[in-house]
Image (cartoon, rainbow, N blue to C red; front, side, top):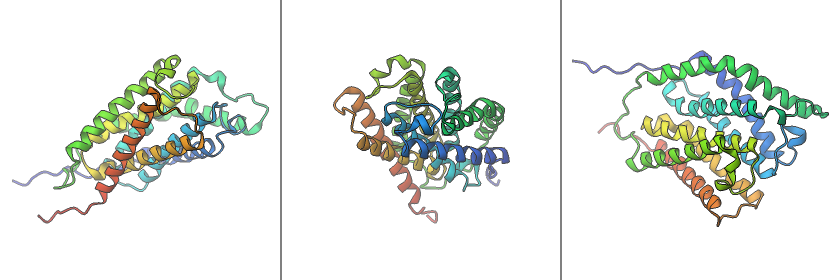
Length: 285
């Protein structure tokens, strides 16, 4: 009897359009925050202090833009769904944080650049996302439940990498949830000062990456996590650049050590995943 192979699952048109629209906004936010970290009062939706926080969030947005940009080059849903979990989780939590702290945004700033950013942010997260997210999340859930082709011999992830993904994913999700739910206690987990709004934003990125790491471990195949691996690597590298640019982190404290451990682990997981995905498959054996 012939073995039944699950069909190829294409990326839906709605998911593709969402990814394109999100890429433009996310990339713009990332560049603005990372490059103009000290000018958020003029060139962002709300003023972010200290500047290292703006650069950190900018690195997060650029990592998400990496996942979206690479995802747009893929046609198989199985190759992009881990990256989509980063986007979907982050967008939902950032939407909630925006609604909780709407008074902090530059909606009535005398500077037109700040007002444009604030209203663009408000339109995307408060007006546009509630209409798009239900359909996107329904598509994510439906396509997530569809079986994908069984990995070819040698394509599965090594046990050590999967365990590391589960562990780091759990740690990042826990830190992210704590920062989001109890931002007043951020100093216990974070090596520099965060406001309630920025604590929730940082927590949103940690939560999104943590969820995606667990999803990557579940996928258990190099090709299906390629998009996410590049995002992990970009996130870790840009945060180390941020730390060098703004040398305010005391790496000897518990929050400093925790941040260093997370970024080093994320760099290692992303690098190993990318290198593993480039290895030639010994399919003929």
